[in-house]
Image 1 (cartoon, rainbow, N blue to C red):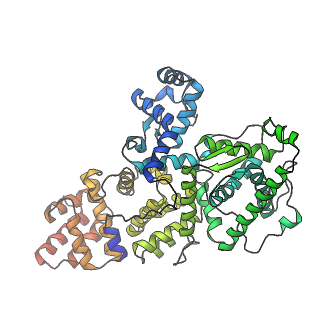
Image 2 (image 1 turned 30 degrees about the horizontal axis):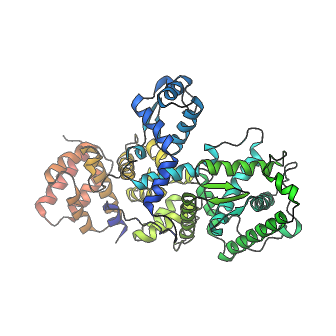
Image 3 (image 1 turned 135 degrees about the vertical axis):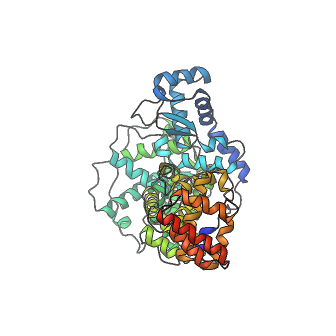
Length: 515
């Protein structure tokens, strides 16, 4: 299948990774996710009913509810104002509520909440990705140490997933300190005063090719892909070495725990004295992951919940897929990458998109793809939105922001509709007739530039007008900049002389500005 044929086709083939043995069924995972987000759904539905807007959303306050709106919600839902604000934040992070200017609207996930398990799981994963935002770090600590802990947490999560069981918190503390020391060494930075020791001599001698991170779990919507880039390239034995180190650390911690006097063990559950920043921040990170339903902590041990285990496994699986870049486009710009993928069939092209996206933060990657879509090449525009389908929900805000750009509007509306489960084979269910005609011309331009003449002729069948005279009448009104070139190419390719003549006449009329 040629790249141009791919540009014409509206059907999208998707493949989902199969979860490991022992993972609860998808329906059970969705049930657990619904339970975790039940309070957030409740406040989102209240906001939908009340029509939260204007004074309810103080300007410049990042979408938080006003005190007056929080009090109204608290009275209606029998909650405290603090609980309302917390549930509101979780609803926004999970995509259950969307902010449009001074108005809050129900997100598409809320609309599909009761019928679409996929929407529910994506909503929970969005909250999991934003754990450090959902449960902010103590304000007493500087941003630097907090950022280091956030950057180190993905490796801890990957080791918890690989261990397939409980993990001593004391062992996690040791691993956290080692990881932060490695991060500082990589940046050639002087450690912050106190709190986290410099790496010991034995630890400082990293094995050749050892990965910077063993997993790419996100620290937020943009940080996930950046983590993945670090984890995609190292050798497999490096991850095994990291896991072996973790097991060793856990064994040493268990041994040290058993050697403590009984009096010391008895005090283990008592409030600890103020420790170093790393210890306090590890407690915060674990509490944050517990609060979003990804982790359980008790008796000095941490364990991933079924939801957390599934999410971490999916992200590790994505990293393994992203590491495969047969066409070698991972280091290229978005435009060059898309041009390289134009020669590939859909499956290998998606692998290239995943590898390219894994090598950079999702925010900047999405912006670069949209910039490429704004160019003159219609084929790149279509491929850019194919790549954005691989990004999925994290790209939604950026795609919504370009809906008012004429050149991107039809693609953006179709992309958003597919996220909501609308059939992509029925453009008139999403687009106006004029927008559907504009998209037909743009796709025809891609075919004319990169495809074969017979394919351009067959492209006539996909026009919403149904007849060539109706199509020609409406094509002249939409104002697409490539209309003349498309009509000339279609006239040259069509085997029917009478129809080709009518198409050439329409091209001349568009060129001269005739009605």
